[in-house]
Image (cartoon, rainbow, N blue to C red; front, side):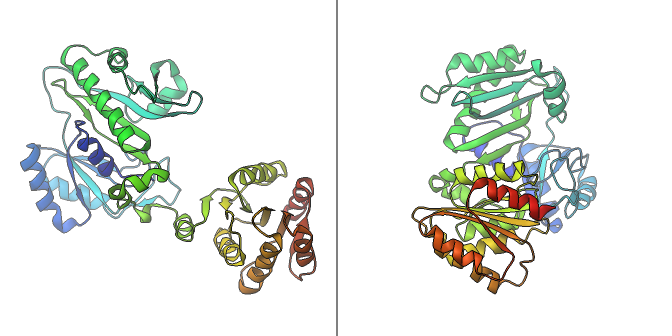
Length: 396
């Protein structure tokens, strides 16, 4: 589950991490109230306005701007709130901005220069350990740093049993070139950041930038946080933060009916039971010259109703040119799945694409007869290669 920046910062603040403070606004009529509150709490004179959407690269799309007074603040907020923000991580249509974060100015003059760093924590799947990834080159161009100068990115694996050890936090601060007060502040920052990551059951914490201020404080200026959906039962308060308007509506609908669905960019819809078989089916589609349009696991209760619901979800994608149903009937009876496909064809008026059905396992022979005897554009297959050949045929 993805969080907005202001929500991620709330988790950080709960664990003692220093953040760039701010207030959230979704109604322009409340701007005087919230800006006065921010001035009172922080003493800031300038304001940083940030669009709150689930996508990075907001600054490049015009979703992060500076206002030097409250009059200018109103003008900037009105230009961002309600806009369709297009960034390198959105579609061409962009995302509607429903909320903005008005934050304090932390780039004030002082005894030393400000410096931006990049820090993220995620799972290193190669080692089975959590990993801190960090760089001296934080900011909006971190992607080009990774591409052109990868030697400027450092990695530190954390043993999940031991947790972060003190020397590792010091190593991060040292590699970032810090000394004195800033060094001590960074050691504390990294330790608390890791605590936030583990305590919240997150799969990603990305802070870009981490700022060393002119008076050598270390602050999280941004926060991109992804929570592990499988652990949300332990964080009921975080579950309430889910912003369904930011998520794919088809994926939201699928989750509500208990289907595992992920939208993709291809032209062949998939309906499968079991994640392993689903991945193999997606490979099969690619090898046949197509591209999977979705990941859809109907699970171990692929009855007629679930099959029909799955078809409805798949057909909401206008790019789907064919559908491959690949079911292994262990607990699931293949004849029930086949009947569900026929019923779905009868009940849905918008099935105008060919369907290839491969059913193996319990009552597979009965299921094949049901499919072969129907009068629709449904084609049965027995083997993987046969299904692949039929996909090639229907896509020609």
